[in-house]
Image (cartoon, rainbow, N blue to C red; front, side, top):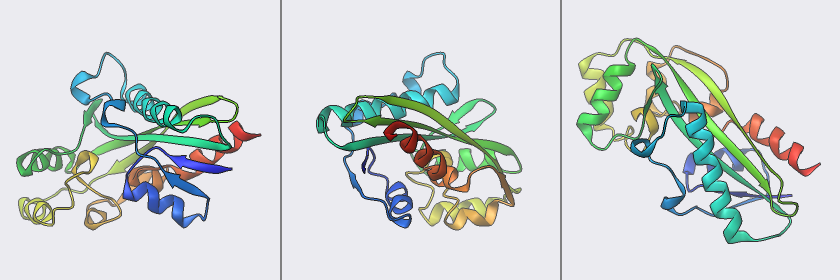
Length: 193
């Protein structure tokens, strides 16, 4: 069954391409997401799932009924139960990287899949522990100059230069990249059987 990815993320697109599944992209409108500032009294995992559902539901409305599954995902970086979003500028990126330095944090991806043929919907989340080494000011400044932190939750990309900062993780690597593919495909199988 065809997958409709409710995301414009190049990382999510690459993960799906790597496993040779039939998919297309239909990016949801920006309004289909709750901003961190609008976050109500919910946990980071509930927040990620809520955003994944909003994205998937917005795309499902556009697509209508057909033989396909919509896959929505939202990934957040969480330190001490506080969500670190995408940095707005260099100072914000520096602040986030200083917070993550020499600490353990979590990456949580909310996932929602909707079977467009049956209307059935299921949601869940994946959580991965990430360990950062102690970063020097020079490492942080050099990393920010690479421009890699921008557009990334928590101001880093594990699949890029930030791999040099991460001695270990516990859990799904692809979750930290932005799409916990094993969990996603398990959920798609469940919703289409």
